[in-house]
Image 1: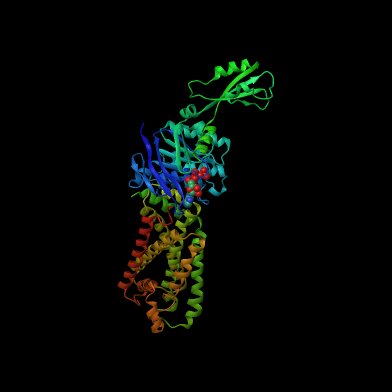
Image 2: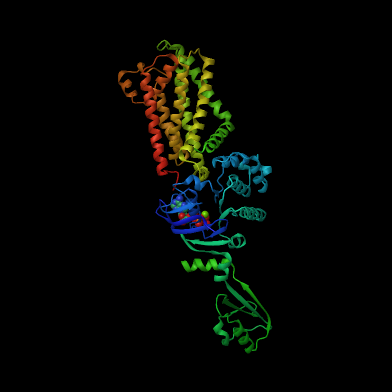
Length: 308
Length: 253
Ligand SMILES: Nc1ncnc2c1ncn2[C@@H]1O[C@H](COP(=O)(O)OP(=O)(O)OP(=O)(O)O)[C@@H](O)[C@H]1O
Ligand SMILES: [Mg+2]
């Protein structure tokens, strides 16, 4: 696989003197779904804006489909579709005109069938003659998506696509995203919601304070960084963790009837066997044992805390 | 050249224009009619002919110029300011279009609207006064050149403006006075000599004089000088826009 978007040492210092990107290097593979995860002000939108041409990078270089985004902006940008974070739409324009305009702007010949297909897919077809200002927030978000899809991009940027969107549309959106991916479209989405990254992404990039902290396969990330918890349910409540078990850093469950042990799946020895025999040696009767894997959220929070 | 993109911008802008058709046409027609009633009929009846032209007819070129200049500036400045204001500029900046294409789309649409308004005012004028146009082709050429050059100026204003007040500042503070003092409603030769000299520094004088020549065959300054003035004005606007695009001034952070 080759990188369709490649950023090298990209920095951005805004006129205010604020450093929003501090040397970002990132390769996005052809056909993947990459989730960019980061807290408010991390630089997600800035990075996307630089790639798409709304913001000039202070230094560094970027190619899209092998084309430099500055020297060969036409070739680079014709591959890109962008759904911005803000609901920026001409309020007095009809939905259909707004969408056809986007296609024209990207130099694509008129294709009414394609536009109709997109609008139907996004449940906007019956609103096609409505003025944008008459739409709800979620519908406006759909119009933005329709505009981006109207010119058949090979790389699609979705900047917080699910902000202000109901469950129904979120489901529709993921269906569309998966469909696009099946057609080979590369998708980059930003989000604050870990579940979202977890549900849809192939790879996850974590960005904080203008730096990319890591980019990993989602599964690898979870396997590598993931900690598992073993919950030992006891027959009878106990007052505190027995002193003999102190080495295991156990946490007493709220009901006083369970012991929680966290361990690293990467370790050669998880220590479960000895723990269980030590528990038994204390004369505690086990009722049940279960394990759970930590979510991306835990991983993410851990990373951001480490970085600060 | 991304011709499809230019067409898309042009059509989008013209749609906006036709959506507000009433304001777009009614207000210039109404104000022109008022000018004719006040200046042409009430005052004009007390003024002798100027250079052999009745006062009512004499003010027609100036009236058209007044509208066309303000319309071009207003259309073009609003056209590019509005996307900045509502944020839809993101789409222009991220599309595979060059600045020149954006410019042609917006300025072309703004100039077209102004041209239509100019022609409608001309048609209105025929209802009030007897007019014979000496050089119809030159008249149209002057009109078109004025529409385009002032749309370029409007484009600059629209990019420069940070709010709606600034958007209206230049037209109000600069263009309207220059047009009124540029001989729209009187002949420069009617002024005292000192004022005549000062007036010669007003670029609009050359445009109105040239335009009036196209109507009546007589001019206060030579037609060559008028053309030269338009060329200089257009060149200055193009140079400024070139710099804006190169530097990304107030378009990109
Ligand atoms: N035009 C600008 N001028 C100055 N600073 C800016 C500008 N745009 C963004 N910033 C700053 O750059 C930083 C990164 O902003 P950015 O919008 O990229 O964050 P983000 O990761 O998209 O955040 P969010 O999740 O809130 O959308 C923020 O601290 C922001 O205040
Ligand atoms: Mg953002």
